[in-house]
Every structure is written in structure tokens, then in C-alpha cells.
Length: 413
Image (cartoon, rainbow, N blue to C red; front, top):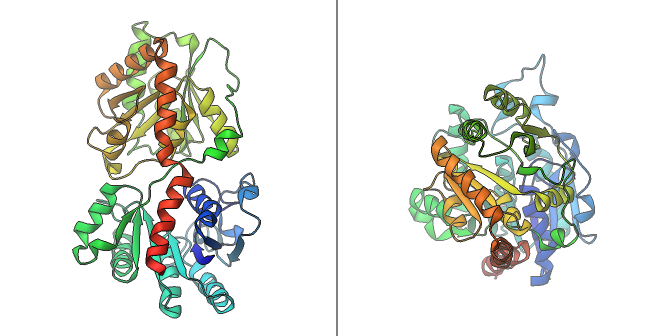
């Protein structure tokens, strides 16, 4: 076994990020390919939200080091305000001090063959950079998605800091990993001198998690159409407004039965904004904003829905939401409201029972909803969904861990 020191802020009991599942899958499946992980993460006090349902998923032979860390917004604020410097490069910059100290001690105890760090907490890359410089160990920086994307992050000072971090990482990491080819190509063009370092390991789903659950329909009558969005909604980049307008029009035209329709937003994070948008379109009685539930319960709910809802605006064209792969494995029809030029649209075009519409076009969304309703009545639907479940296996977490292990072995040889 070779050893990899994995620096990840998002790790159980933290909740609210798909990055938790990416790191968990690596530590779970890398031993199949002769890599054993040690995880360097943050003390739970730094987490704004916690849930313990995934703690049992951490393999018992994986050492987890929880370094001192604080959240500037909660621990260093007075009357809701805190010095701007304390939020650079992010709210958890204090983690660098505890993690580099703990990481150096671990490296002295057992020198790893490889160091890995994962964004979107940019401090993780600073930790990886520091530990790699100190030890001389090769380092893989897992960006997942682009750090700098148009006007993101919106704060100008933070964007300058992140750009500087990004440039240092590309110059010093042995490899930089992204979840889509589009994102990797963006960085090859942005940093041509380091283009060969940009690699791809896709997001995915965990087959073992699905094997342990069966479909449920919480609080639903058998004759109710349940259209489910599971996860975070961003009010601007994933604006549900045009979708709500299309639903209102179809209800008015009696294409859909108001009494038999439930549109559920499970753990959208921006719950108040979703409720306000639904109210503005007269859909209070149709839209259900539901609280977070444990991960496996969320998978069971996906499997029991009549349709699974995706929002992905043009700001995310280089990205593919991790839940897309879970949706496809859940074996239910998808209603995908996306930018037709984006990576999400491209991926979904290779699968069946996907009704796609332009996220910004109410009329196009209405046609997609009608196509989804027609798909539900098709006698071919079970076969089409079974084909999706077979084809999505390429993106299982185990398969992607094998891809990642190949990169690790190449870098560490």
C-alpha cells in the first residue's frame, strides 16, 4: 500500500456539500488500487451545519486528523460583522495554521507518497501547497470546478487573492484535477505552460449506497405527481422563476392537475427565496420546500419521485452537478432546465428519458414539461430507464476512484 494524505474541509460530520461524497468515495475505494488514505480535515466547530449519518461510512482503518479551525463569520464577528481580512482567502483561513501544524506532524510520523487537497475551500490548497513545499512530496490539487469563473467570486479583493492562489497551484502542483473536460480545458488555455498537468476525474454516484435503499414517497398520495429537486438552489444562476411561470401556464391550460401535483425542493438552502418565487407565481399550494434529510433517505426519495428536476444556468456551463449521476442511477425521468451550450446538457443528451428545456425560456420549459408528462405514459419508459442505469455505471464512484488511483500512481512513481 502507498499512502496519500488527503486535505479536505468537507468531510463528515460536515453537511451541505457534494464534496463530502467525493472524498469519502476516494478513501473507500482507493485501497482496491493499493492506496491507503489519511484524511486531514477541520475540527467540527468550523462547520456551520453538521449531521452524523455519514460518519459510519468512513472506513474504520482510515485515520482522520481534525485540525483546529474557526469560521470567521461565527467565531470572529461582533454584531454580525468581522474584519474583511479574516475572510481571506475564505472564512476558514484559520484552518491553515492548525492543519499545517497537524499535517507536518503526520508527515514526520509517516511520510506519505502523495499529498492531495480539494477545493472549493481555497484554504485547503494553501495547506496542500505548504505541506508539499515542506516535505518535497508530490501534490495533486483537486479543483473540481474553476476557482475563477467570470465575475465569481463577486468580491473583487477575494477574486484577486484567489487568482493568485490559482496561479501558484498550477505552477507547483504535480497535477490539477477537474470534474469535467470543459473545466480542464479552460485551465489548459488559462495556463498553457502547465496544460499537461490538468486532468479529469468526474463526479459520480455510489452504487453501494443505492443498493442499500428502496424507493419511498414521503407524504404522497399514490395519484400525486411528485417532481423533485434535491439539493441547493441558487436564486440567480439556477433561477426557478421561468419554470414556475411555465407550470402556472400549464395549470391554467388544464395540461396538469393542480390537485395532483407536488413540486418538492428538498434542502434548497435558499428556502425563503424559493417560497417567495413560488408565491409570486401563485404556486404556494403546489410547491413544497422540505428540510434536509439523511443521505440515504434522500436517495430513496429520488427513486420514488415521478420526475427529477435539474436547474443549471450558463454560469455553470463548465460544471456538471454531482446529483446528475445520482438522478440517472435513481432510474427516474429527468426534467433538465439547462443552458443548451453547457456540459450538463451535453452529458444528458447521451441518456434517455431526459426532457430538456432552456432554463431562461418559459415556452421551451413548457414544452419540456409536456414531454416529461408524455414520457411518464410511454410503455417503453422502464426499458429506457434501465438503460440509463446501465450506462451511468461508467460514473460510479468506484470507477472514478480507479481513474484517480491511476493518476496517483503515475505522479508518485
